[in-house]
Length: 458
Image (cartoon, rainbow, N blue to C red; front, side, top):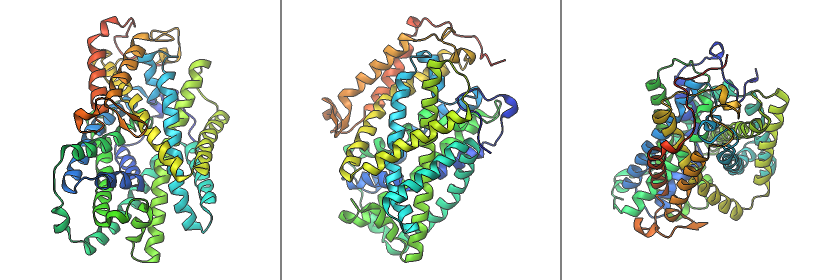
């Protein structure tokens, strides 16, 4: 059955599900090829094995901690993530981060479509372009069906992912001298910070839509258990993938860069297992790309509804929005040459600088300023307590972006002060902490009339 709700409040009588679904969704969604390749970058770019794994784990913990705090807003407010931003930026002001969210997730969907399309082509013996189109059609169906189907897919992805990863790890275990790999241990601060940044950025990218997948949980669900389910699922799933990437890159050496998928599939040892691994890659990307497609659809809906002052979305509009967002991703994927896709990925990672201050403002306002009290009807009414624009929140947000720029190290942008950290990008730490301190320190300038307790729709 297709989901009928979109950005509107989920009433208590429609709440359902169990906390464990949060674990399986984020665990299964992160057992996938892109996470493997991301982890491998820590070694490909000069890091060792031991300290790369430690750095990746540190980054997972930091990023997942922030992400899981966002996840708690879902069951408490019954709303998707980005519409809550209207409390900090105003009903119209929230469009600023929302527009960037749409761009980022359409881009991530496009890069995932390229990779999954290749796997789909191998499975069905069709061209890569046909594989991408078929893959996109599957994503449209799942994203339209919505919340329940996505969570069921997460459970199945966990099972498929565990079996595939177990096989790959066993294959490595039987063919690799791990004692020799463990000796690849030479700590350098730049490479350690690189590993931390790779994994923390991966987790922070989920923040703009994490509560989209927790908003149907009962309102009185345990906050601690919800936090732990999301945190443990995303940390364990991502760390498993990135660990496989680190070990594989260390073994393969120069044979890995540029041939990541074929090398991973080659670990299957025979044609039948290679096809199984292709299936696991494709299935993992279906889960992950669906999250991106669903999140981008919700963000676009939030933008349109803000200007049209709508609370609900018709089924017809839902289908149109999903098809449009996935179609844009598919077209980008079909037109992408390898060099273009590489540069486009750099652009998407650069966009993360715009979500770090949003996250800091969102969490500080919700937990420390508003003390978890939100006027939900006012989020849909620009004449309510949050107004059309909250210039205080917008000003702090812009400042939070600007203070990161000197510390960004990206092929598209080189910050002037990255030399202080040996050329590594630590902008997200400076941006998050700096924005949080600024927002809290100057909050007396905020003119909003905040509610004493959460106001729910009648």
